[in-house]
Length: 168
Image (tube, rainbow, N blue to C red):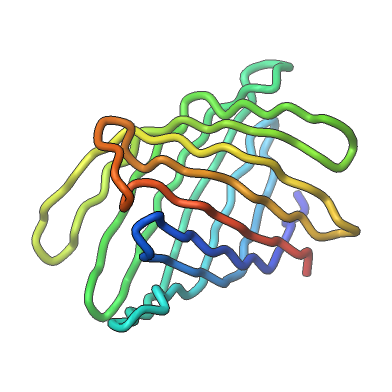
């Protein structure tokens, strides 16, 4: 089973001016129809109170039959000096619509629970992200919008995200 390895850089820019940018290495492996992977990287908010953190993900996805719909999950550990959290995210219906060999549109509703390691506090929200991904040579670039909590729409719960993934 070959392992695909990519360098990924992503920035999440919230409508309230806050942000998170990450850079790291992603490994993916196919097991039957499913894909499992890890991501190890660093993140920062590039603000007045910059908080650098280690980011460690475990994730997976599996298509529902021969359709353009799949289910997915992600477990993200965000281990910074000022915060240590784990997020458990379940994506029941990732919808992927290929427009041609290089361009895909997608929508991805999800339920996410975040737990703070220090306080034990947790919050759960329902969100969605959607956008387009484009292949440029071997790189994959995405541009998307994200609503972190559909029950509480405010500037801090809306973001514009851009990323690039390059095979190593």
